[in-house]
Image (cartoon, rainbow, N blue to C red; front, side, top):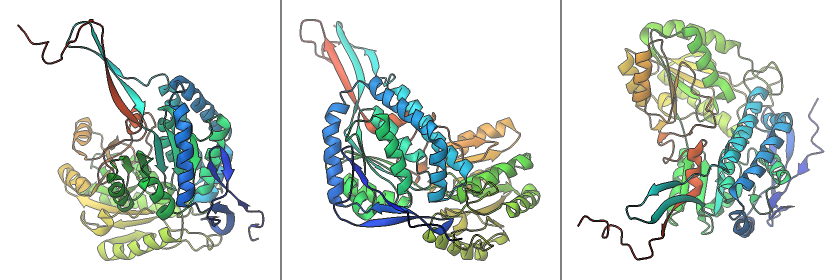
Length: 502
C-alpha cells in the first residue's frame, strides 16, 4: 500500500518567538529516504531577508539574555534536557523517518542531545575564569568569560538533533543567542527540536530557526557583519569556502569537517572483538558518520581470518527501514549520496578485490529507498583513492601491512585526522598508539564511533580548524576572555616598571 501523503503539513520558520512563513513564499519537501513516496512535510525555503530578520531578533534578545545570570540560563537548559528525555521516543521515530538511521541509533542521537543539555546546564554554575596573584601589592587580577553575540549555527543531517544541541547548548549557556540553519535533508528534526526549546522557556529571539538552501540561508548567515561567531559541521570543501568568506570579517569560526578513519588490527588482537568494532564503525548509520571507519589496517597474518569474519557478518546484515525492528542498516540519506557511493564502487573494483556487497539494495521492500549493501574491499593499498577519499557510505577497505610501524604510517597518511582505533592485547603497543596516531580521538580495543559528550570532540589536519565540540572545551568557541585588574593601593602602580628590584 502506498504511504498516505495528503496530510503532509507545511512548517514554518521560527523568528522572534513566532512561527512565520518565509518572505520568499517558496517551500521545499522532505521525504523518507527509506521510502521516497512518504512525504514528511513542506518547509520554508528561507531567504537572505529572513536571515536578516532572525539576526535582528537575536541581537535584540541578546541584550537581555547576556545579562541573565548564567545559573538561570542553565535552568532553562535543564528544562530543555528534561523535555528531550520526555519526548525521546517520538523524536527518535521522527528522526528515523526523515534521515534513515535505525531506531536504536536515533534514540542514541536524542540521548546525546539530552546529555549535552544537562552537561552545559551545569556549566551555568561553572563558567570558570581564573584568579591569579598580581605582581604588584594591593592589586587584584582575574579573567572571566563573556559571550560573543549572535552565533550562526549550521548543521548536517546525519546527527540532526545531537549536533545542533552540541552547538547551541554551549552557545546559549554562555549568553549568546543563535540563528540556526539545519540541513535541508532534516528540517523536520530541527523544527521538533526548536519547538521543545520554545517550550523550555528560552526567551523570544534567543533561538531562531531559518530553513532553506545553503547558498542563500547559509551564506547570508556567514556574510552578515552582525554574526560574529559561526559553527559549521559538514564537508571539507564547504567548510573551506565558509572559512574564507568569514575571514573577511575576522569572525570566530569553528569547523567540524571530514574524516577517513582507520582501525588498526594487530596480530595479537582479539579478532572477534575487532570484528564487532569494525562492523559497528563501518556500517552503523550506513557509514554516514564523520567518525565512521572506512579503513581497516591489519597485519598480514590476520587479514584472512579477519576477512572471513567480516564477510560472513556483513552478508548477514539486513537492509530496511530503520523503524523495523529487524533492520541492521538503513538507507543512505538521498539520491546524491547513493550516486556517490555507487561511483566509488567502480573505483574500488579497479583498486582492490570486492569481497562482498557493491550493489544497490534491490530486494522486495527496498525499491523505493536509497539502500546500498554493506561493502568490503580487500587488498587495498594505503594511497588508493578508496583508502584516501571520504565516501560517506557503507564501504570498507582492508589494507594489509607488515607490522605496527607500517600500520601507523598507513593510518596517518590521509588528509584527515578525526578518529582512530587499535585492537591489541599489548598494553605497551596501546600506549604507543595513543602517542603515534594523528587523530583527535583514539580508541583502544573499540571502534571509531561512540564519543561521549563530556570529552572534547574534533580532529586534526583537514578535519577542522582546531576548535572542539562537546566537553568544557566547547565553551571556547562561544566566549571571549576578559582580563580585569582592580588596584586598591590608592596610588598609581605601573606594571613591569614599579615591580622591578631596587
